[in-house]
Image 1 (cartoon, rainbow, N blue to C red):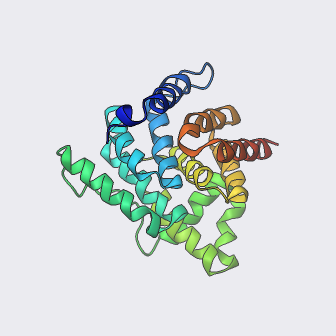
Image 2: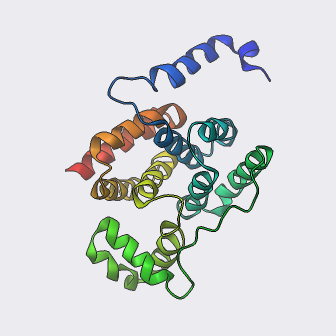
Image 3: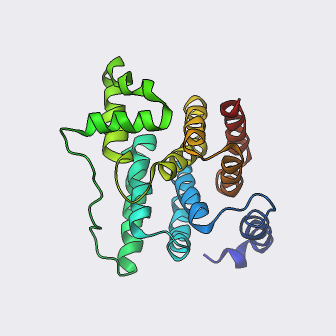
Length: 227
């Protein structure tokens, strides 16, 4: 369906706001690679799969590599669950295949089944502080968090820790209802150098995709983390 034919007034305002006003707002700009990474993560978080399909092509043209895109999707599983991520993985594979990208992509795993817990706990400590090295001992879910979320995913190649904390922030902000975790990961971002002003820019660039309520909640979480 051609929305310019069926909804011309809506499309005029929506497209202007999303692709002109927001992108070019003075003081809120982001580099294309970072902006597209944040938007793809936010679309996963809010389950915007049709817009994700459209933006994926723009992201690939705008500097994201197939490996980077796949890493965004893989890491989303820990924050959104495989039930919500599987359709996005299928769309990603369809788009990449249509562009002539050979799958599977080069392997990015950096842990084994034997050292994933140790390296995952170290990744947590690198982001949140040395006290996190022992956090996995608090129960089986904390152990899964260290070994699976951080050991299986955060340690992978393709994205660095700053980029991984950025996309986690976007997953949480976009799905809503995770404000305690969002505040914690805002602080984690700041610990890695993604400061308050940077996170506000990220929220600004994601706002057209996730709406005002979740964006304003995210701003409040960033402010709490900064305090």
